Image 1: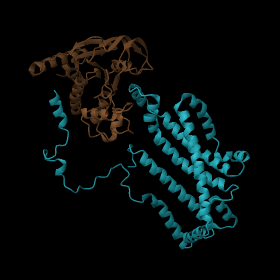
Image 2: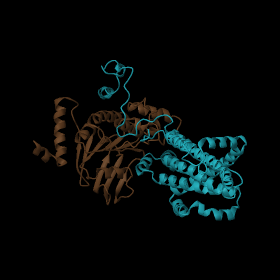
Image 3: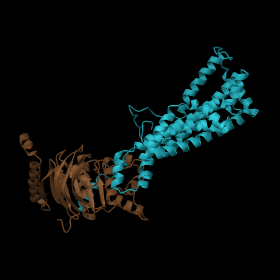
Image 4: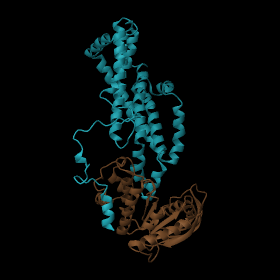
Amino acid sequence: MNAISGSVLEIAEEVPGDAPFSRQALPAVQPPRRRRRLGLGEPFALGPLLGPGLLLLYWCVFSYTGLLDPRILPAPWTTLTTAHGLIADGRLPTNLAVSAVRAAEGLVFGVIAGLAVALISGLSRLGGYVFDSLVQMKRSIPTLALIPLVILWLGIGEPMKVTVIALSVFIPIYLQTHTALRGTELKYLELAETLNLSRWRFLRDIVLPGALPGFMLGLRFAVMGAWLALVVVEQLNATSGIGYMIDLARTYAQTDVIVVGLVVYALLGLSSDAAVRLLEARLIGWRRTLSQ
Amino acid sequence: MSASGKPVVRVRGLVRNFTLKGVLNGVDLDIGQGEFVALLGRSGSGKSTLLRAIADLDTEAKGSGEIEAPSKLAVVFQDARLLPWKRVLENVTLGLAGPDVRARGLRALEEVELGTRDRSWPYELSGGEQQRVALARALVREPALLLADEPFGALDALTRIRMHGLLKRLSQAHHPAVLLVTHDVDEAIELADRVVVLDDGRIAANLNVRLPLAGPEREEAFAGLRRELLGLLGVEAELAGLR
């Protein structure tokens, strides 16, 4: 019995040399793999920069030909000179550092709070009853509408700014993580029960890794939310930061400084989103999706 | 081999209803130590319901009756049910503790002839390989009872034949009691010591499989048993009509 079924199974294994068309017999250079007909095509290096590159091209062309009034939007080279000046006199680096710290603090507090409440609410029936409706209520109030109250409570200093950023980070983290935790498939619950997994191992080995893609999606929304909230709070009684720099430039009608600030915001958003996506790809290597 | 001593599984007067998948109308079933029982039935006959009741997975079902089953049981589902975020070896050793877990997992993988795939992700395996991992995950726990719910139902015919040989060897080596739910008559005869036919939630027949080891006598006995089981399942008339 052993020998018979053993040999049946071995037929499927590669037997180099024996078979006329074994792996070794293939030519060394293989033709390129056929593209997926319904796929998205091959990815190429620096592809994500194509859109911004085209925008920059339009901007250059319109400014150069004079179609774009410099009072409405300064030319790219003017903006670049201004940026250089702002870096040289230290205004841009100082304000950027202040902004980055604010955004990072808000992000950290918001992610911690969102994750903690999502875990309590997602993993326990009682926790869900206590927290989920509350968060849904909070969700229907725009964070910006809370600013007057937050100012009255915390004043106009840093705690207010970090709190507003954290509040807008909290919601996407909570929503995506909670949905992913509650979305754990029943078939895995059955498996865990037949394998006699403890509640802790069930959470650690099944529920949490299964919810990771949801959390990462929430993190992408959260990072963007942090920058957006930053813009608002920095144009509100701030004395430093990119938003303050922009607001000050408005007073003196310095369009070029405003544009530099906006470009900095855009670059920050783009690069932080790319960082989160890189993290996502490293953490979730087991998934096969259309983007691969 | 026949049942000896106290049965591993003892089911008495089992009634289940109001479930989505099937109904049981008073089922008695014993499975002896190391006995391989195939549970055969048409779809909707209640065979999966019975297996899920023994595995204690039917929390939403209403019913009555007694079930005694060992706590050391393992289930192989129709889908391999591997965790996509764990590599093959971690899937096999899921939930195990102890210093030699890794070695035990590797040994189990070798037994299902996947000893070199321990670092693979589940999506990198074929359907048959995934089901072999599921088998390794069940056997590494040295269960007293192995419950298999149409484990080869989603596999192609050739892979299924190879899996039969593998399951037969593994059950002879580890000697758990086995309850295999299937609708494949040949599979039941090939693998089981005893075939239990379930019809409309009741046990319709209980046949011991005693085939000569080889030769035309075996083929003849196989064909006879096959005819009998197909008759019990109510498809013999259709077969005759086809001829």
